[in-house]
Length: 147
Image (cartoon, rainbow, N blue to C red):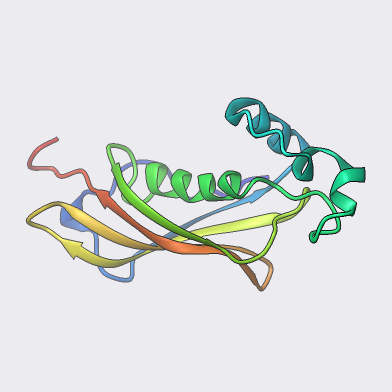
């Protein structure tokens, strides 16, 4: 299940402080299995119910970077969108995401440097009322002048 806003590009000339975009996705067992395959992170806390029950999480959880990847999707597809170059990202993992959880990934513009085409974004993922990830991203935004 995804709830993606329209994809495309918002050029730096049109970006404003407070502008926000989001994506909503249900994390499935298949997503976790595919992420394990691509990343080669096969930690049993993600893949083995019996093992995961005996951890502090008391059950399987999604990879933290799978959740963070949803932030990347919002940045690369919506705000600023196509043509954006990721320059940096800080992440703080606040709570686990479990198979079947629906994650709301949101980015909000907090700072714009027009001279350098840099945009700073607050990044956040939540499951219901629980913030599961928060951080900040800095990106190089596309411009009508150069692209």
